[in-house]
Image 1 (cartoon, one colour):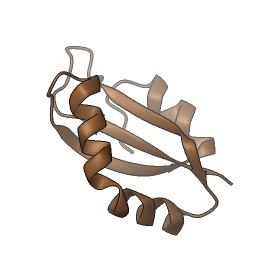
Image 2 (cartoon, one colour):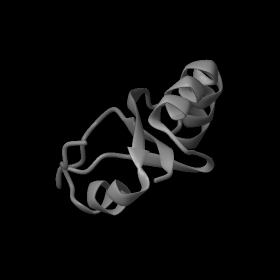
Image 3 (cartoon, one colour):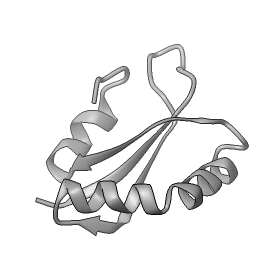
Length: 80
């Protein structure tokens, strides 16, 4: 199963949804590889999100399994 980085931004819309950013590259074979990448590249992830979301802060960064992506992104207010 492949793993991907999912970034959730601060703030919630009236329907319970949040701004999110899903990195399809790189993809990882294990959650450990994903977590290590996030730790090493945290500064770059933060800078990219700052530009993508006009300075909105990051709430949380997740490593998410490929089979969970649709479930999480299609349901407003879904717990990860």
